[in-house]
View 1 (spheres, rainbow, N blue to C red):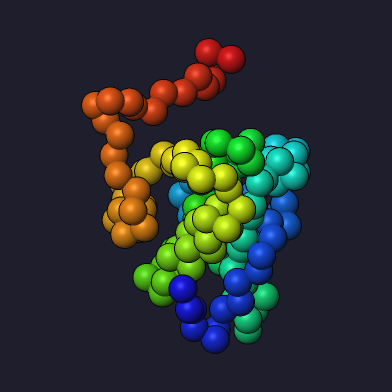
View 2 (cartoon, rainbow, N blue to C red):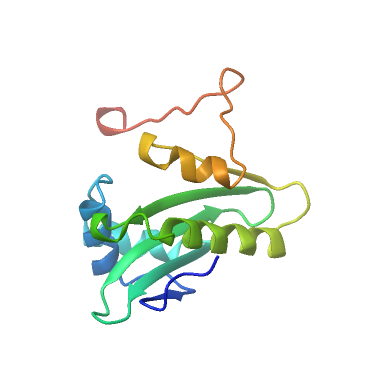
Length: 143
């Protein structure tokens, strides 16, 4: 997807500090720098978008997975001041293009969709899996 000349799509993970800032500013669960470094290194694919005039990282997304069967889209985030400009579409489109080009046939691609992102994901072909399957997590005190 083409984005405005105000922005530059970068085909790699953002800097760890930018990742931490963008997650918090976009309303995702905040993470620490010591979490960001190994998380970003463990990405199968990651992209981010910079605002050309300021150099600020304003959007990102990444895929984690085993490269053979499972591909999980994570960390989709756009700063509120830069939303509604096609940046989420560009990030997700880039990630899905990489999966289509590099993944084996019939790979399993999934994500957990928060309410604000559902329309974006549906536009790209994602569908709810419930009631056949639902997302579950082990977090906090369960670890």
